[in-house]
Picture (cartoon, one colour):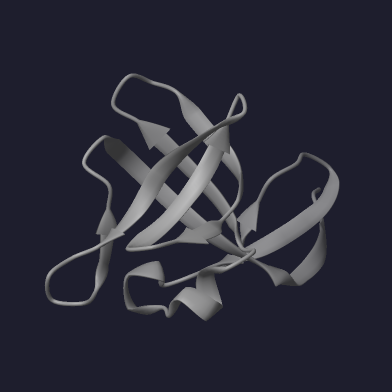
Length: 95
């Protein structure tokens, strides 16, 4: 099931299984990350060496890191993470 980001008529974005994705699959996708301090980053994923970053108030912060096993994991300071596929959006109508 997709994630609805607006009330009324809006767009549905499908969640991405980011832990098993490749960097090519993550590049350019939408990311919503909540940090331990309550800060939320909502933007586009930028691939960096060893993982992915997001931008918050002009500062690039690590969001996804590559674990020793090769799979992705949340960066240590991230408490919640959702990656959404912006290439396959669909319309929905509430009500």
